[in-house]
Image 1 (cartoon, rainbow, N blue to C red):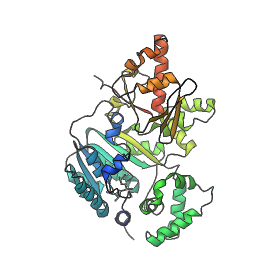
Image 2 (cartoon, protein in one colour; image 1 turned 30 degrees about the horizontal axis):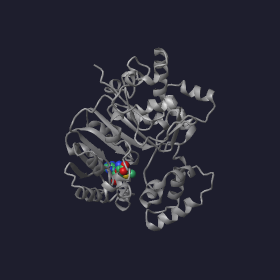
Image 3 (cartoon, protein in one colour; image 1 turned 135 degrees about the horizontal axis):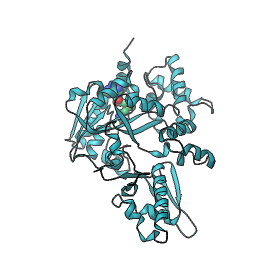
Image 4 (cartoon, protein in one colour; image 1 turned 90 degrees about the vertical axis):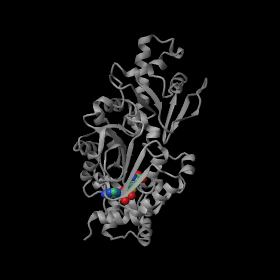
Length: 409
Ligand SMILES: C[S@@+](CC[C@H](N)C(=O)[O-])C[C@H]1O[C@@H](n2cnc3c(N)ncnc32)[C@H](O)[C@@H]1O
């Protein structure tokens, strides 16, 4: 009987993940970016402002690309990549040489031993890794131990509801003893192709375009070790290690505004009346759309000072709105038509005044400055404040705006 970590290591030697990118410049030029990359999500990670000019960033379980991507995107920071798989690290080295990434250091090993690298990290990225450990708590404990004071951790673990059917298929393939070989993959692909339309795995299969790559297919259906989390399980998991959820990378999946937009108004209102945590848990159960939870964590002790938004407080309008990565206007507002915005799979329509307010969100002006624009001069000041707060809080819940704000004095 093999230790499960050996099986996991062996998988990523044979099927290094993700499908390797051979030229970062070309890929980034074509619009690629990593979800949660500080270059695009800084206001979400550090709403109070970036802590340091030069940071130490750890990519824990870096796979084939992530550490090199971060080093390339952030030449001002030092990036350290750790992974079990020599095949994955070989590709990271290829990218390092190709792009002359002098700020990247790579280590082969288990992230549970990351303390051996030495020092602490200002920002840790750990995506798609901890759910593959036999003991994810041991992994998160090791990462929490090397997190610098006021450090941030970008975590991605699988979501339980959207993957329910994946685990059923995994179970069947395990009983059939289908191996991680070319023949095993071909067999499993034929099996998945025959799943009935009502099978719980169908939505996932349709949504995960990466399944066309064998490494992603093996990672999904032939993995020897993986588990997934509901929102409450995730909160318990991080809480056990003195960490606290600070922000989702995309609120659209968690708040009812987008996720339950088609539900009747009274049901929507009942969900919206719940606490944040309960809203997220209910939305997850009703949508079955969250296959990955991607979030920013802080030490619980730091979290109250850096809440990701200040709506509902006296300082709400001191916040500075930033448009979320990927948000684009595909149709301007006209006399007879609403403005239309797209971001990933989300679509939003806005009237001309609302669209004009959104266009004023440039990552520099505060909400107070935006709401003082002549655009809203006809509204009484109190109305302007109430409607302004409702409008911008909604755009935040839809995931279209991120907010930074001055650190509390
Ligand atoms: C699904 S891939 C994710 C890669 C990368 N984080 C990304 O998001 O593209 C999981 C990676 O974690 C690595 N891994 C799994 N368990 C590990 C452990 N205990 N310590 C270090 N790396 C590990 C695997 O070798 C693999 O490269």
